[in-house]
Image 1: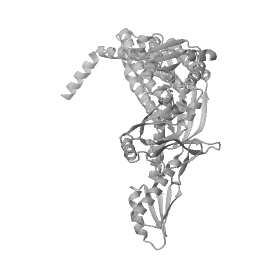
Image 2 (image 1 turned 135 degrees about the vertical axis):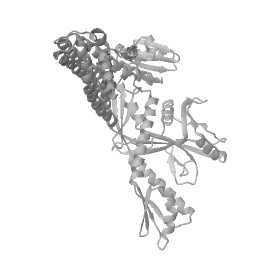
Image 3 (image 1 turned 30 degrees about the vertical axis):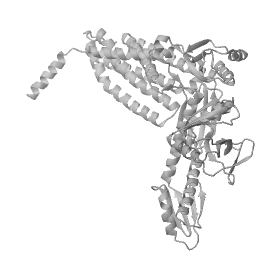
Image 4 (image 1 turned 180 degrees about the vertical axis):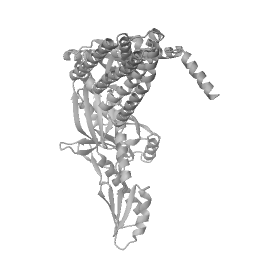
Length: 604
């Protein structure tokens, strides 16, 4: 019975029509090609540098004069709601115009205006985002001061140990930092070390701090796993905050990526004067509110250099700030409106309710790099005010020198206080002209590569070569469309190299199939039979080769960064599109034309 069924299945296979594709296959293929081709269109229309002006319907007379003085008149002015977009002929004009408008206090963002027709934009299509090497801009390599994080943990533990021993009535011990990750407790002579160790042990957490008892000394050392976790958390948190700060600066298409154990690489495409970005990104700013106490020996100077006596522990830190906005007060003086979270609002309310009529100081702390490259903290009392009534989760800070200072302070507070100070290790700038040269060189290489491969395919495979040419064009459109649709994808110069490489790999797919067809024709098979044999026999080879390359590309993307990721993305997308167009697309063309032919040819 089994042999009969096998014979019947073979008979059906022999009489089944060759080279037929169902209608849904054609429909799905057409839908894919049209979708990706449509979303690739904006990239070919190009884009121009622009500046977005928020809260304006038109340029003021003062702004127009400032642009005329710099000879940077916009080529287009577009209005949309409460937003004005100025389009410029070059990135040099864009940068010069931004400096002029920023000097007048305008809220501007660096943008790029797509030349795509409105009906295409309305459907959500946008050009491929270009990387730093193609668009030009600035790159910063920033080191996170991880020693600061560890030192802060040790300082916090010192305070906690002192308080715990004081509450346990264990007197005479001296608690001090022995290193950034080590605390030493020197015990008085003749005491029970076990009592001190038992009081301290609950503070150590689950293997976070390790307790070692020595003669008259308790040594608390931060565990290696906890140390590594603290460093990782600090870098990741700083990375997120830096991204928020960049968004506050109005820089679009920026990339913030971790590099190594304790560094962050920032790419700012289109930004050729990174001074403002450096000042804001490198600053660690926070606010804290202190009770003013006349008999205290702990003092911080105000703006005039006069010391202000404060309690050592702040009433509230900037960690509870959820929003900050700069504005002008009733007397025309700059101020910052602060909004606290629920816990911060309750904490401030409890303190202010029992301290009405007493002064409270606002202390601004900032870490900056000095001339020797060392990070130093700068503390300053920016405001001392008398509490008039119980405060809630919203209040205002006054005493600021200028509106610009108020805006910068508000921006830093909105973006969050960094968990560790930063130090700029390296700064690299790529001019817009060099970016344009990279684009021209990359796409010239792609054009020559495409032309050379198309010419070879047409000369060597004749009519089938024209099918391969059609597939290569469809392959390129699919790659561009997928790259435009992929969230966060950026085209870099190595990415263009990936495009050229995948076009060459797509040609390999056609060569494998067409050579298998030629082999069957040489054996005397009909053209229809040779086409069926060629696609079936080449499929496994093509699939295995592409899958192994795809695995390598995915690993490269996961472990690489920046240019490596740009290359691997285009390689991955190219492998997918070459499989679709090379196997599925070409057969959809060949089947209706030659798929049923009984001719026996010597070559194609």
